[in-house]
Length: 215
Figure 1 (cartoon, rainbow, N blue to C red):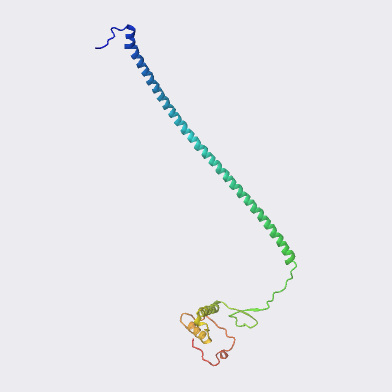
Figure 2 (spheres, one colour):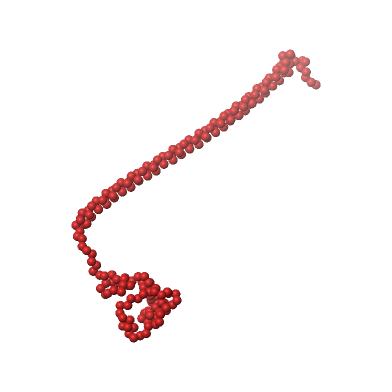
């Protein structure tokens, strides 16, 4: 059986069949519109906050860059001021040193140079070159060049030989040095005139009748 509402009063029938369903539909529509409105407001706020957040972030980055640039400028100015102070300090030190040297020069010129007596320089000991044929015993002989190298070579060889304990009694005899010179100068590696010896005595007094080696 289906209740058609025939036995109901017209007001109750109208309320049950028309008013109440329309009221429910209206409530549902109002609730759906409210939710849609809320979603639109949330979306609008989200977009607005996103734009505000981006602008805020850009402002923060800009402010940080501005502060860093300001800090760099302050550090640069500080370095320039320190450099200028250092240069001024060095300049003052240079001026003081220049003034000190000028005063010292004046003192030297006044007390030492001005009061000094000039005399002709006469060395008490004569200096001869080893190649000078007029060498006497009243001075010192400077040895250098080829002869100096020979003396250094003999000294190095002697030190090397004496560095071994078994050779402590070794010494260069005149015969050994003469043989060394003969083998050195008479070889084909040395051209003529590389070494000239100026004899202070006659050759006969030096050789004492002995024959000289050809060369």
